[in-house]
Image (cartoon, rainbow over all chains, first blue to last red; front, side):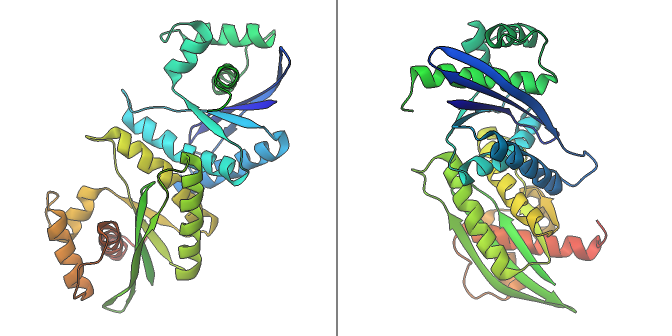
Length: 161
Length: 161
């Protein structure tokens, strides 16, 4: 099974791909999709959607995990992220790829058993579990791999959700 | 010039179309796109996107005005609306139709000169300005026509934005 983790954003969307079979988990690739901040909001969404569609068509994931910022301290950020996520969910739905949503705290809790873990601690777990010698760069791609691992554990525990 | 007003939502998206030439403003049509609340979030976004694309391809607007909920009292609602808006902005960008965003208070202010006008007062102005004998139904479509009128006045005052 191939799992795609996504950390959506209008300026930067991280993605991370892992494969799993029997009790093996393998890192496949990770990266970051960027849009031009001088472009209009709707053109940035279009640019992100096109880049994301290319990744999905190349990687062909069976399922996706999407980081979901709930309204919190920075609601304006959460709203911008939600616009980007709308385009990403659309790209998944058009290919009939199911997705599950994870709040940042739930990703931290799953990987480190603490909802308040630092980015550094989460990254250490990602590196260890995927056998990576270097920290995945940039941070958005690392967060996306963390989301893919969270999805993996969720699917193993709740296969029918 | 043909203007499309949109009041986005994941469950209900209102749209309203007006034409303008010289000093004439004419109501063309309005309606509401609905998605099934029992469907998954990503499939509702896909359904909305398909319905919206059909409307845009049929109506062929020159420009669109999109109601923009900023984070306020109900940030969770604003985030769900933002996901739907992401799909709508994508549909516009794919057809190179420019859009402008309007907060609810700015629509009220433009049409009634009060940012605190009631929905009823806004609807009365919409009916009067478009020469409608009956209130546009449902409310989402009425809001979308209000957004189209706001866009019209904005374009007349700020043609180059």
